[in-house]
Every structure is written in C-alpha cells, then in structure tokens.
Length: 292
Ligand code: PEP
Ligand code: MN
Image 1 (cartoon, protein in one colour):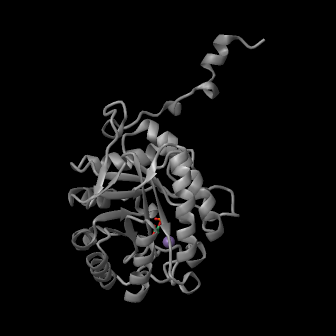
Image 2: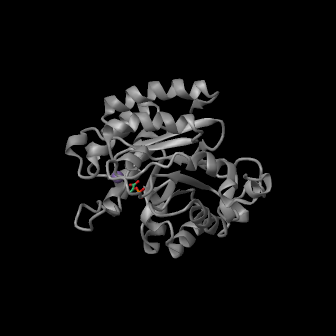
Image 3: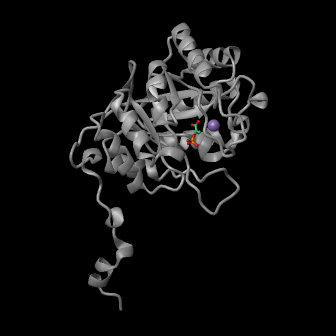
C-alpha cells in the first residue's frame, strides 16, 4: 500500500519549483505587486494587453512604413523590426544594420509608434539605444552576460527572450542579471523551446506563462511567430497565450509575407493581423482584460 508519507516525500509530488530558488530581485516573494514596464508611454504588465507587431527584419522604407501603418491601425502599440539579425544560418540576410536603425527612427517619428529592435553585441548597445524605445535581447543571447550587463546599464526597457534551451530558472537568472544593473524595466518573452518535436519550429511552452507570472513580478509576453514557425498556427497560439495570462504578444507581420527576406513563412499578412486582433479582443474580454 502506498502511504500518505511516502506520497508526500516523493519528489514527483512536489507542487512547486522542483528544488530551484527564484532569484530574489525578480521574485514575487520579494515584490508582490506587478512591475509595469513603460515603453515610451506604452505600459506592459498592467491590466491591459499590449500587442507588438512588425516585420522580422527591416528591409526598406516602403516595407517598414506600410507594415507599421497597418499594424498601428489594427491595434498594435509597439513596432518590432530587426536591424541586426541573428539567423539560424550565418549566411542568411543579417539585417541592414545602422541603416535599418535609421529607418526605424524615421518611421517612429512619422507614425508616433515606439519601436523595439534587437541588440546582439555589447559594442552596439549605445547605437541601438539611440534609436530604439526598447532593446531586445534575443534567444541566442539570453546567457550572454556581458551583453545583459551592458544593456541593463543603458536604462532603456529590455525585452528578454527565453533561450531556446533555457529552463525557467536560467531565464529568471538572466533577467535578474539585468535588474542587478539597476534597471527593473524588463519584459520576459516566451518564444518556444527546442524539443524532440520537429513539426513546429519550436515548441511554444505556454505553461511558462502562468509559471513565470507566479514566480516573478515581471511582465510576460509571448512570441507565437518564432514559437511555431507556421503562419497558419499563429492565430490559435496567440489566442491561447492571451487566455493563459500573457501581458502581451510580439508577432511578425509583413506587408508582403511571401517576399519577406526573413521569416516570411511565419509572418502574418496585414489582413490576417487585422482579423486576429478582432478575435484577441474577444478573448481578452472573456478573461476580464482589454487589449490596450
Ligand atoms: C526575433 O524576434 O527577431 C528573433 C530572432 O527571435 P528569437 O531571438 O526568439 O529567435
Ligand atoms: Mn524572425
């Protein structure tokens, strides 16, 4: 017979955290109220849900402008677009670099929408911070501690994407390392992890959302584009992400997805984005929240 005592001491029955401690600075235990990150006037982590949308990479003025205008009209509050691009193969298009940053700055001024873009190297932090309202640290750099440190020092909000092989504990340790620099404006982003499954680009770990929200006071958003790698699946996973409590979404949208230089197969068209926003509003309302 299985005794109550042996059940209670069986590690499989542990309900919380399986032996890791949550780093103090990011822990809900240390700070019970949610941190609200302010991206140049757009608040993430409050009751409203924030949609970040735009192309994977900045390609041209026309591409960025047409996409920015449409996603803003559709309800996105922040524009995404990579100027420096990490790629699965180093021989793929790596972005326009500083020229891309200038286009982001220009479109931000023309449309009034704040922008987030990735920084890949400590030497680029100052330059990227000159143009961006929020700096993104990508999955491949989540444990690049010198970069986390430098980005944390620049005093812009940081969007930290979960490493594709990172545990929740490692993710929170990386976030804490940014907070250690005196910058508490950090948003956590679940973007899918590598598993044995190959039918999707990554396995979108939506259970990370309630887990991170429980363990940490930092806002949590989801990237259904890299999380699935499949345009047709993005709407379903976006709705699910809102339903499990995400504070926002970051998704790839392109004015001509089939001609995109980067990740077109997982980018929504402008029409698909507009349609999805209508559905997301309903899901948000069903759980007592609004899309900002
Ligand atoms: C991106 O968001 O542009 C990106 C490259 O994502 P990730 O770092 O999650 O792969
Ligand atoms: Mn991409």
